[in-house]
Amino acid sequence: MPDRGMGSWQKQLVPTECIICGSREEDTTLYPPRLSPASFSGQAFSARRERRREHYRIVRCKSCGLVRSDPVLTPERLAELYADSEFLFDEEASYAAETYAKLTTDLLGEDLAQGHLNSLLEIGCSSGFYLEKALALGIQEVLGFEPSRQCHLRANPAVRPFMVQDVFRPELVGQLRFDLAASFHVVDHLFNPMEALRQVAEVLRPGGRLLIVCHDVEAVSARLLRDFSPIFDVEHIYLFSTQTLSRLLMALGLEVERVGPLANTYPLGYWLRMAPLFKHVLPWLPSGLLRKPLTVRAGNLFALARKG
Image (cartoon, rainbow, N blue to C red):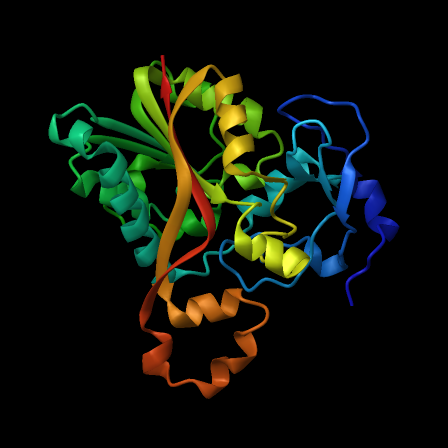
């Protein structure tokens, strides 16, 4: 059973702070911690694994409403875990690629048609599935950063030369500047999203765009399921709403052009695995039904911002 207290894990954890307003006021505790020795492993820090209702203490800033985990593992330990993380979603990757490609064309189709989007930087590119889609959309130059060794090895050989197995740092791209930077379900995982996105904005061209997809902590599913929701997870340090993500981007000097809910398409079996109240029905359903694609607004949001 997960340990509701910190126990021996206290020594491995460090405090976090509100990165938006920096308030020193005492936070509101939403949920107590649920941790166990198995909470901190490479598999536990792998994308789209089955959720186990393990998370740090979840708090909300009384001043600006930002939700975060506190305390959490050190940045150094987090980097080790993400480097060791596993690639567990071959089938789902193709569906994610289609969703993100459609989002890109819906938001930036005119720029693509006019040849204004020629270069892409992706932060947390996994196996490179979005990089492939970006090339197919006509973006000529793509570059992705992904710390997971296994994801890098599983990448299509056609895009692997455009991937760097490392955490993004501006010095790693030299003088390169990009028309678009994209990050899909990454900002939730970062120890300091404000600093990370500041570094990303630094390598955007004037007028360049930043496209982010992340969980929506104010979504109906998160409100109803409370800490049974898979968004409350040991991987997730900061959890945003449309309001707090917009405030974060504006604090970086970016103009928020669009922000809103995102519908995702995955097989029914994937949705049931991610839903703690329904996954027990999986063995009773026919495989053909489990493979059927289903588009759902499951509690994700997107934001598009522009560098002046």
